Image (cartoon, rainbow, N blue to C red):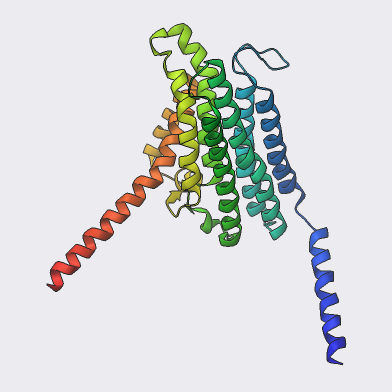
Length: 303
């Protein structure tokens, strides 16, 4: 009798699971799939990209394959932000949507940025015939990309476990978010692919900065990879500073940032992404300093 009851309970649970899978939120899921498709497109463009000679099929003289791959990563970041917002606003958040979002993120902001960095640095070093490009350097470069992918997967898995569907739970992040880490890589690739040829024509005195980015990219990739799996606190920029009513100064700062993006899009994205990545570290150091000072004051008062 007890065994028969257990079998009935098991069948009932299976029916409920099947019923939940039949009823999914269509619009957020489509946006999430666009996130994954953008990541796939980024890998495709990065595989074809050589910075100078190759151009896109519509023959844009400024947009290289590497730049297109970076833009695909940014489009994936926008889709990643929109799908969660749409799901929470429509009250259609679900475990299926959360799992689908993380699977798409593994491709778009996990594998794609690492592969893009790998191809950009490899092609840049080969084009310049650098003596540093040898077997050991190539292996270290591959290990850096692999480190980023592993940290991105771990960060997404931890987010799935600790995430809550409520809007109030999306004001801060523990560790650098994977889209922000991908944005750092994509922004600096854009700066190398798009902005540097323009600077070489207009300001030849700083043409030396293009190869510097090539050597800087692996260190940036390793740095953001470690920040992803850290417990360094990061603010949710949209929820904290833009959404809802804010002081007048916020509007002035936002207009200033928009004007900077119009003036120098790639340079502003590169600097802005670095500022956000370092903001969490600065905040963490301040918190540590306050804890040490409060501990010292407590010891002095007890003494």
